[in-house]
Length: 432
Image 1 (tube, one colour):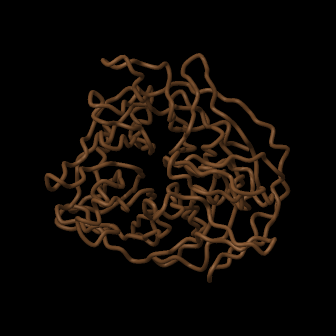
Image 2 (image 1 turned 60 degrees about the vertical axis):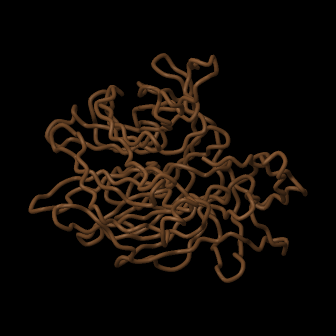
């Protein structure tokens, strides 16, 4: 999440728009499928994880992004791995109980940034030190690194396998790391037996493609390609628009997911909307193409330094889509080699949209609301899903982050503690 307040506008029909990106990149028309009825469905979670607290007692924790690992030997011992930012990684069982915590690495120097784990994903069947392992791979935005952990094949517990000399993902030196324009969002995929990571960059629009490499029984990586997403757009009314950001910052991306079978990267640019771009032979192919825009797309706004908010400075021209900024967590619910559902978190209105995996046709609009077993999900950052039936989840498992967990707990100072966690749902809402 980012601190800039967003400009909110009413929803409008989901229409095709030809949008020219300034100065050189041309984005294709957004999906030409007609907008569905947009009936909002309410669903509830079956369980939730313990709260993660952003204070000294909680080790400055902040639940952000989940990854589901299915235990092939015993599905009941499958786990959910969740980032907790400064508090590292947490591992939960299918009942939401905490079974392991991994601390983020310490700062390399007294004035440097410590580890801060942002996103996490799973790599299956990675060859390491003469054996084949599954990895939990996480973006360490505090130290601008990609860190890898071997998942025990029976217990799901993690062991650090990060090489000591892994390179910086985006920064040239530690001074740049401390400025924190570092690796942010993350997803993994495999292509012809090679494992890759796609990593976004905080406050910037460039995305890196990294190849994971086994070295001396540990895991390192190298950057093999980059792609810069647009930050300025020529609108159909012949005006130019850029989203309102804090001075010196660009419209960043965070949520990313790869459809391996289609060779397609989906990327969530928070203030802009949902993109897709092709991946092939370890490189990005062609230009990003729009799937859907945010409601706020094209709305003029100006940053107010006193309030640190974006203030509307003109009339909404009506070129936006349905997603309420920020465009956040992405995940694909695979039901076959090419069939399934793409999910995106519409963070600004606490809802989720789904799309057909093959055609990107809009499907459902739903919210995770308060239920008997858990409260709902608000300000959702990350999400993950698997279609494998698991105990208690016959249609597969969907895990979403809750950025405003309740009930509210007071700290020693009598003030509310910032409380985040993850909600576990049966994935039936993602089936057709």
